[in-house]
Length: 247
Image (cartoon, rainbow, N blue to C red; front, side):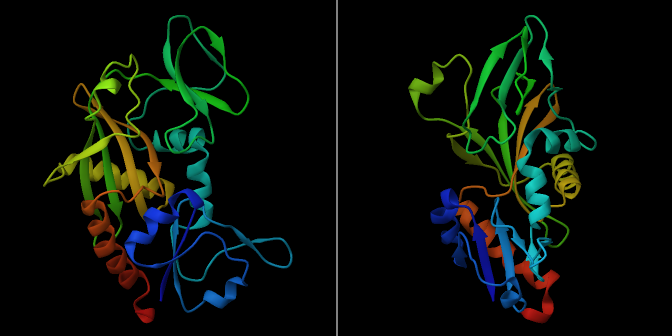
């Protein structure tokens, strides 16, 4: 049986995928040896009687890899080894440099602001180069059959947001594409393989014919029919590929 383990803020949307969904479960981890567990976001970590981290026997998106991805500065630095990312600042930002300033634990498009240097970066914070472009994309990904992709561009229909000086697109809508460029497919797969995640979505800016990877989201909100259908189809296929003896 496939079961989905997620975070509280994504429970309602994750339930749309049709799997038995849990936010937290105190049962012994061995109870699920005959189940396939999908970790959808920073879900619960489990420990044995000696305090050592344990993982489900059959799992998609291992907890240790999601944990790395949640430390956004570290995961972005790791991504920069295989794909293009905005420049990262850890200690200070020089004069007149425009950056996005945020906590290393940011999520849900919250807890960040655009600032201009010079300033010192606080502990538990980091900054990234501000890239001026109106082309932001999200690529939904599932690592079955060599990789499956769903591409959309983030857009807004709210006129008040168009007046913002520095536009945050995290709560905008989507415009979906029928095809995904092969160059983009290759880079998205490299990014997911680098963080060792099976499922999620990559947030990407496009400027001067280059893709800039902002982050990987391991619990993308299921808020359209296209996203729902994409994961319903491909998650089952991925589970069958990785754990054929259970399905």
